[in-house]
Image 1: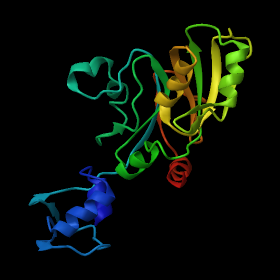
Image 2 (image 1 turned 180 degrees about the vertical axis):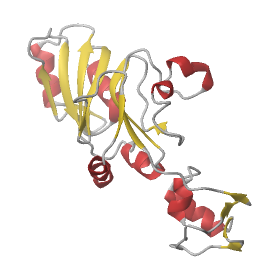
Image 3 (image 1 turned 60 degrees about the vertical axis):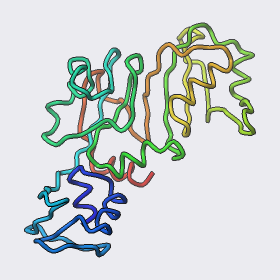
Image 4 (image 1 turned 90 degrees about the horizontal axis):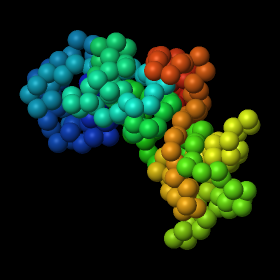
Length: 231
């Protein structure tokens, strides 16, 4: 029952358990407060007296271009990432994370709230790789400092790895890390007096941009979905 409610897009499975316990969910007119209750395809499920339908779960990967917002409000529809995936499915999906207008690369959309919550958890260790352009060349001295890490508030702040990119200017670097999100990356460079001008996510949790041109999307395979769920 909690999975059915979650798949309807109302809330996560954990929150659904709380609503079931509170007695606001009925199955075929009968109030259900039992955890783990199994529903049948023909059951009529109501939430606060309103019938709900379980949506098909969708998982979409977009190679986000520059100058598109991850906001989903109507005012920014023409330059919203939602406009780029509008024909992907009839279900209402949402971006798992936010990339601002200057940030590009891999962006996942889904209506699976449990998976979205897991993937957006900053404490979750999920391997990500970014190509970053800085406002000036990264000196060898600062490169070594970032590589070694910076202690702040009793914690070591660093990346899994950082490297210059072959045949690119010294203000372009590759960064691999698995914690803290994009703000974490920018903060480290700012602590060394560098500003991140562009950031392109080229790898996330086993997903890559291979055969996915900028501004295009594709549906994830079952194997890819299972990999994400096991992270």
